[in-house]
Image 1 (cartoon, rainbow, N blue to C red):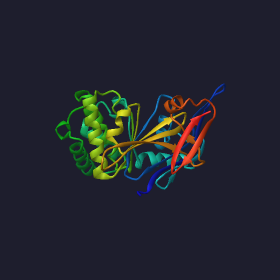
Image 2: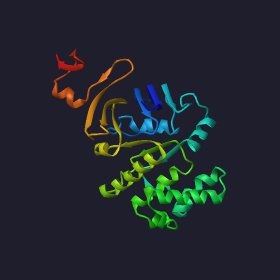
Image 3: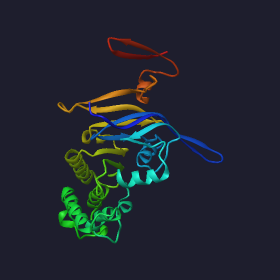
Image 4: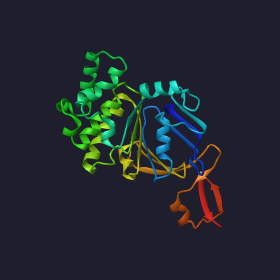
Length: 280
């Protein structure tokens, strides 16, 4: 089994105001293998974007355990979080305008993160050209963002996110503003880079059709992982699995609750490795 690169256990995030307390994550358990390309899906308010922001070092959890590689995100100091964001995480926003500097060319946008890290301009330019080739835009190096299509902007954004060779690439609805054909192209580029560099990729999306594009899909509901969709590497069949957390608690998908007519209590039968749940 590949080693876990991301490990979350009993992860909580609570937002407090003067009059309100919102629990965005409610004891989330989730592991991501090194080099895996996976997606997290769920309705608005399910906690998926909160978890992505924690992984990005943009937010801090309230309790639990969360490690990325050797970094303990719950206990890092502010200066360590800044270093983590700069060196170990690449981030792609849904809004293309947030990913790119409008007055720089595609090549210059990719060079910028490296130059800020002190990389010599000659080396930064060479790597930026390599990344533009990797995302299929070597002929658009001198174009500014307003001269590129939405899909081309997102492909340049992938290059920007990978400029400093981070081991983790996060994407927040990266194709939310794109048509299906353009989205397929963006996901193809992400998959090729994932396979060629072994960068770990975590995508947050509302699109459940993403199952065919990634290794695994985790569905979140009410701040927890509820089910996993895992694609068999040989047959390409997709299996839906219920998630049991570290305490043995089982999240049953809403549609199964309705189908089994489970209101408050249920009888669980464990026979020959199979679980049967009936409402009472």
